Length: 548
Image (cartoon, rainbow, N blue to C red; front, side, top):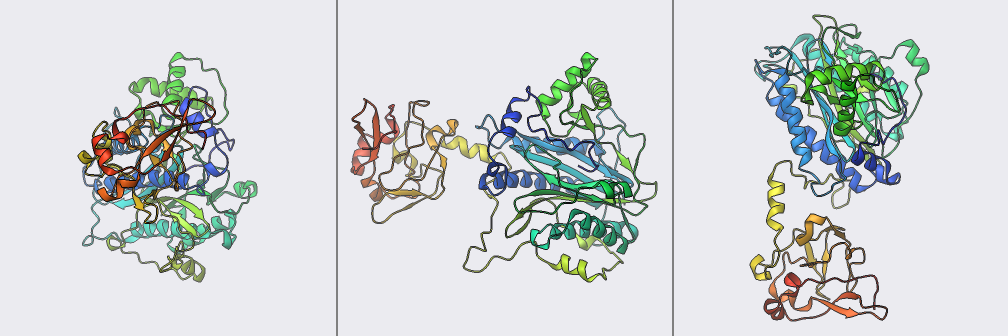
């Protein structure tokens, strides 16, 4: 989000017709919506990894004669492809684009994402190109932006004010990240002042009325905001705030070689987002159709009308919706002709042990030759400060969180899952490597302890049933057998030798209270499994509610 929105009202459910998104955005306690929860932290990480992947791919495509509209379409397609590969078996998990791909050139500051019907725009040597995009997983948003120069290499370095504005924007973003640390106790207005001071060092100016802001689940712009280069009126009206642990922020920095004043020209606005808590009875049937389709497909996330099949309907509908404030527009903004604008954006999570910059690509200083040097000791100290403490050797690093690296952004993930969906074979057919869950062996009892706290039963992964870690003879007390009557191959065989399996099997015992069954682990010889593989071929209904 680049420009300051007209409203700060919160709307998580968006609309009754947006069923999946509204369910996900309104349930759960505060912990479920915070990166303090590992699942939430990893969902931010999944979205971030996808954003970084697509951003790198697009940067590689920034070449002479590359067509801007085609690059935008390709970026959106990749975002959808990679997000759709996640949580395929979870019907209520929304995921997709959180910011349509925008590619803005030279003095165009932001939000340029042309339609298919518009004249083609081709990249030229030496142009300053800004790429902006975002994705979300289950409503947890990650966005990023990066600036490159067409044709820049180590042998053909960017110099002059182009290099100055790029280095200025990047260093300001890095400085702001470090000022988010709660122990520093910086206020948002103090950060705004330092953004302006840092920009002056490079003889540049922040674009007026641009926001860095808090991000929450299904909410791309939160209450806490940092306005770069605010007007006098905005300074008096800005609500002061500090920053706290487990908050997530989009740091969006746009710096100009000119005066920092932006305006709209003749470029069509193509990006919109549903406005919070606005009600209006649209007059045109075309507009009502557009509004309903936008809610169904995108919910509360920004979208491009390029993604609609009928472009004419999208143009008419978006115009009326924006006129009556049902949709918030993202106008294409320009600096003066002959000036250059650089943009860098990242998503950051504030954790007790530091700042996690989860999106954003490092600046390639080898292709830049900047003549300006920072002479401010405060700014130098901030830039040289690590975002989070280094991990201690032989220790946990003070509770350092790591994003789940098992995120696979290619189709390999689905192929691997398909290989595991097999039923009715004996253990020897799997070479005792039956489960994708890692396990270790307890040498005293020979019972298995899964390393992960929860994981899916391999043979019924379509149902996404999770069950807890068990110790000794404890049963899976959170499985709901009444929903799925057939259970096979509960035990993770991975990394087990045949000799290890001689003490494990499920035994059904009747309870005192009903004809239901309670399963417990009992010794049984391995050869009996081969002759009559109870684990893999036996189906039954049982009720593990009672323990005998």
